[in-house]
Image (tube, rainbow, N blue to C red):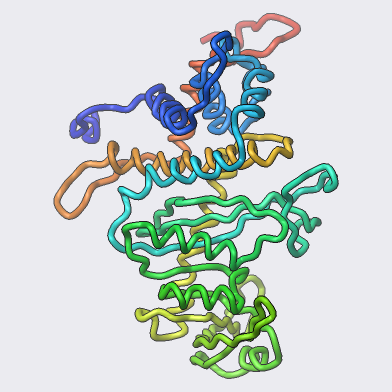
Length: 389
């Protein structure tokens, strides 16, 4: 028996993880089915969780399973029992349920856009978001996410679907309104360059949040500043128009200069500018260091992509539901890791080794067992002695 097991008060088995997630979804989404329906809500969520953990499609999982409902039944109920507004509201509530109680009194907030390229017929697809060309297209299934960052751990607080016409400032205003209702204090707000404009900077100043935003070198003045000199702080401004009125927002910019030293094949001096208003940042180097914290969000996206139900549907409701589920898996993993798989001790809890990949494997195995996924392939002759030990 290992030291870890000697100190443990109990164990969580893979089937219990599946039950936890199915119960969470069943309690959050009140799906009512007809009395003569051949399946119940738990069946739907069992397939959804299994497909997400397996990174496969609903049809593929159901076709490989002997005890699962038919994929036709599952997809029918997803089409008819879920609407976009409910998925958005309930999804965010569910994400916050396993997050807020873990957060300390002060956290860092990150807002980001995530664009998934779309290459299909745009005339047949509603709700696309159009942006600058990326990966050979200007059309995307796009989402904005609000994260809390605590000691290199990232917790999703909300996700919002983007459609054409949405702006960075409208998304930021919505998310800052959510943040105002939470009990924690915002230490700082980190956003990417999508939010570098006068409206967003005005919003952040109005909410009185410390912030760091990478600047875009619009205009000859800032371009000149970024082409010469060493690390320094300057005053800058942007003029913004709204409802026919213009105003100018002023803010400090910290220009950080570093030697490339051959990184990425580059040499010479690299200069990066950040719009900064934070009492704990005194130098351009500190601005760069603190902003680099948000790069961990890319890891969250990678984990999300690994646990996203594969689909070709253009239905916005189902796509948002699948995104919420992929983010929920990460939140639940962190919640269970802290609440159940951690040992209380002086100086803070000890978190036992339990990576997200192992968490996902356990759920996948549980779903395969529950649905009786076939783990064999047809052959043109029986296995011989080479397959026997």
